[in-house]
Amino acid sequence: VERTLTILKPDCVRKNLIGEVTRRIQEAGFRIVAMKMTRLTKDTAGGFYAVHKERPFFDELVEFMSSGPCVPMILEKENAIKDFREFIGATDPSEAEEGTIRADFADSVGENIIHGSDSVENGKKEAAYFFSEAEVVANKA
Ligand code: GTP
Ligand code: MG
Image 1: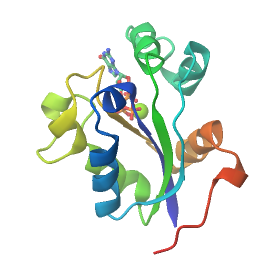
Image 2: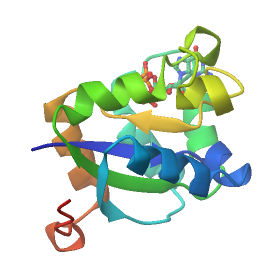
Image 3: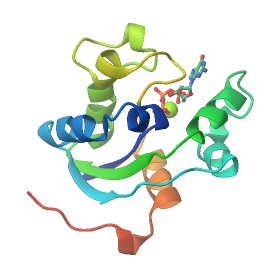
């Protein structure tokens, strides 16, 4: 079964939406197999989004992702990567489909509530970036 790495971003935490977003994640059939609250340093945030290093918004992204606590999780589901990207909606909330997390809760492309891995390979790398093997638990339906 496939895994994806999500982060409830600092805006999600600030808006008191950890519970609501987590409820929707579970209701949509994703099983949480790892979860923690942490505050990223600029280095950790920059490392996570290293692929965007040359983009004009990189500094803003790093600033935002290190601006407060966030909640990374590893989720399991058949087709977790693709299904989760659909579930959260487009990067820019104004383009996100109705009923998606970003359409419902995000303020802007920069502050868009939640992250989802974009490939199985990146999902594995991102999961390992936040969690050791010992922190991943079996959580079968
Ligand atoms: P993630 O799930 O967070 O990786 O978002 P994504 O895969 O939908 O988008 P992408 O990987 O292209 O961009 C990563 C993150 O950079 C986005 O979630 C945004 O927070 C931020 N970002 C992308 N484009 C812009 C932009 O034009 N301006 C700003 N400020 N941030 C952006
Ligand atoms: Mg991305």
